[in-house]
Length: 209
Image (tube, rainbow, N blue to C red; front, side, top):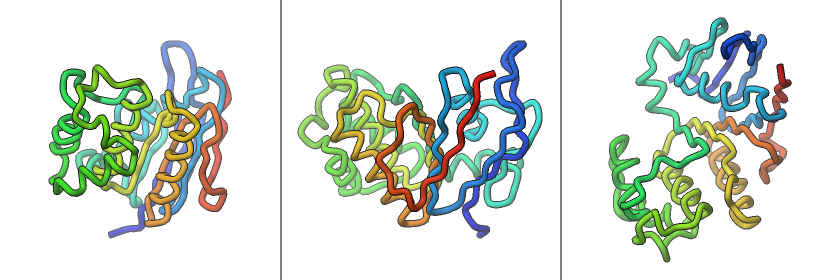
């Protein structure tokens, strides 16, 4: 299998009459995290959605392992996890039930894996409560547990520290560092710097307009 490298080349995207992305390019490989920064409206979320195949550029190319992602979107999606602003959780289900169904449609995992992921994010105490009773920060931790359970090399993260306290923000940085240490890679759109090691960190600043 080819090296886990994600590349964007000369990407252009329009929203109505506004040229959101103008010739954007990047390359990120295993062991690296690309931190996307820039003001509101600069196109950080739009770029993540392009990379994830949730929208398409007017021009340019996104490749994974050397191949255009549009040649095999299902295969690409099988190696990718996207965590947006709002975790994809069912409010009436418990955190544990959400993870069983949300991640379970993608891969099988043992009960011990589920328990381990909940422990890793500090969620065991409230794992069996309905999600509607959890705080925004606890819901974010459920989503982070799902990210771990998916066991994929590529993470696409849109403001992953949203609603988290200082401890939770450091947890996100630690989880990313651990992911990179085993050859994973990540793209993260952020307003504030991530608490990750500088060793594998790269930056791309997008400009408004």
